[in-house]
Amino acid sequence: MTEYHDTEWGVPSHDDRHLFEMLVLEGSQAGLSWQTILNKRVGYRRAFAEFDLNAVAAYGEPDVERLVADPGIVRHRGKIEATIANARTALEAQAEFGSLDAYLWGLAGGGPTRNARAGLGDIPATTEVSESMSKALRKRGFKFVGPTTIYAFMQATGMVNDHVVTCFRYNEV
Image (tube, rainbow, N blue to C red; front, side, top):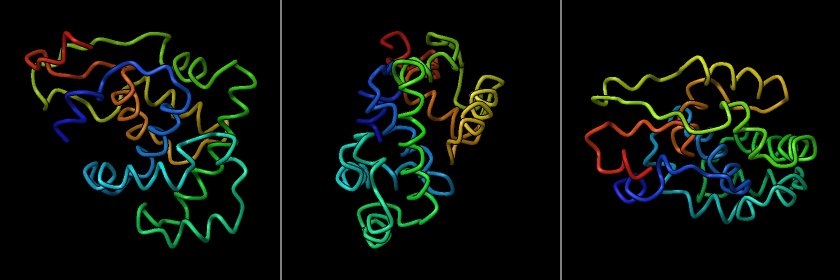
């Protein structure tokens, strides 16, 4: 958790593969701890072809069955099927907007939002932007993208800087 916080969380990401990875991991975390998901991250990368959108979009029912039996990931059929469907939807967004990055960052306002949180208790679970982004993603067909999940995604990918102002990472990202 510390390494993830100190090196990755909150750093603006513009790589389609990484953005898809974080969308999958945050959606998979629903109802579980982030530590559980981080512990399975290597398993997710292996199971979902290093988050290659074309490869995951091509998965079919045999792949779903294989993944439901894979102890390296959260074996929730709905989340697995959502990952495959989300890869297909992400490819459609890429075709329309030129990249998943352009689509997602456009929904987030185009650039990072730098908040000035004094303490962890000041960080909300959702914002108007995460609610709006969640609604747009669901309308497009994405799954497991509720406003809380999307706000966590926005934090993870640097769309918002929610490091508290006393954190050494606040000014770094």
